[in-house]
Amino acid sequence: MAGRLDLDGNPIKPMKICMIGAGGFIGSHLCEKLMSETDHEVVAVDVYNDKIRHLLEPSGHHPWSSRISFHRLNIKHDPRLEGLIKSSDLTINLAAICTPADYNTRPLDTIYSNFIDALPVVKYCSENQKRLIHFSTCEVYGKTIGSFLPKDHPLRQFTDERRFLNQEPEFYVLKEDASPCIFGSIEKQRWSYACAKQLIERLIYAESAENGLDFTIVRPFNWIGPRMDFIPGIDGPSEGVPRVLACFSNNLLRREPLQLVDGGQSQRTFVYIKDAIEAVLLMIDNPARANGHIFNVGNPNNEVTVRQLGEMMTEVYSKVSGEPSLEVPTIDVSSKEFYGEGYDDSDKRIPDMTIINKQLGWNPKTSLWDLLESTLTYQHRTYAEAIKRAIAKPFAS
Ligand code: NAD
Ligand code: UDP
Image (tube, rainbow, N blue to C red; front, side, top):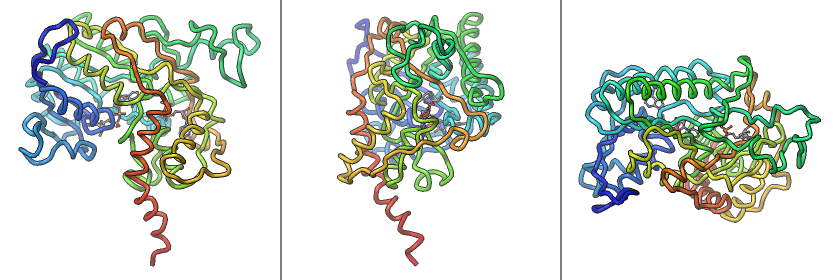
């Protein structure tokens, strides 16, 4: 750890990092990385700490015990926030409502969480001249330009009902400094999240332009891995709907068919959390290269339709659990049935990697198969017994 150098060969000085949302999926992996591979100190802020409890053992238990502290606070209304930001060198804001099932059913909470609650964080960083790494989303790109071409347009050629042939990248590859943000109509409340994230990005950008805020904005493209979200009825509400990795994991663990929303034709690129965390560490350690930039962080080589993801997860889970797959492994469900009124979808998300390559030399490494194998091994080891007990319970007495 001592003697770590930045990308320009300069020694990296230990920093004090205020990490808001440290108890979530990305925060837990980032805390692990910072504790095991750096000398940086983490002031972890969240309302929950279950996912980082293993790092917070009593003082002296881990070599890093003196470098991490947990502060249980809700950034909506806690006067301690400003002091924590002021006393740190860098603030990383991960706090958000970021599960699509909430965007159309709890649009007010979604907008408040992603815009209003993030405002004081930006303000305190700007006023106190503190650096900010803010987590936005690839969803700010919304839908691709290509999805709006008329049905009979010559450029709109499909391999099947909705998928593009990969021959006109300018109609779908998403570039930080060139692609527009294309959302659906206001009744499509799915876009409340993307719109709130876009406005906070614009605010941060304006704070930089007018008041000199040092910022980096991260746009994650479907980061997945262990500890993502929750398994309904086990470590989250039975009626809760997490993101697709946890939904499909839950179905596989319970031996239920995976539900493909609107036929599972939407496309996503998935990146392994451990690869993505490497990119964030490069941003932390290289402020001169990261400040003032917006970075796509994803894996353009791991593109699949949601249907293909479901098929691959079914195959991988059968391998890691030793259980045969169901005869009918997937079923189709309409988005209205699954998410309710106001849902809409991004059709395709391929990150352009030019900027992150140029500034930080980062590239993702892990294939979709490999990342699913390690993630589903974790899901099986963590949840299979608890699910069996939960399924057996009603008949126990
Ligand atoms: P997550 O839900 O696991 O983590 C968010 C954490 O923030 C949670 O632990 C939550 O308790 C905390 N939090 C929320 N509101 C808070 C508040 N008011 N006060 C204190 N803590 C609060 O989500 P994640 O996947 O780790 O995502 C982190 C960030 O990255 C979010 O901003 C999200 O929008 C963005 N993002 C993630 C992905 C992805 O692929 N995982 C994709 C796009 C964007
Ligand atoms: N999805 C699905 N079945 C599920 C959960 C999600 O078909 O059980 C689809 C969803 O409609 C979307 C994609 O999977 O097209 C990815 O959803 P996720 O919740 O991970 O978030 P997003 O990538 O849309 O932000």
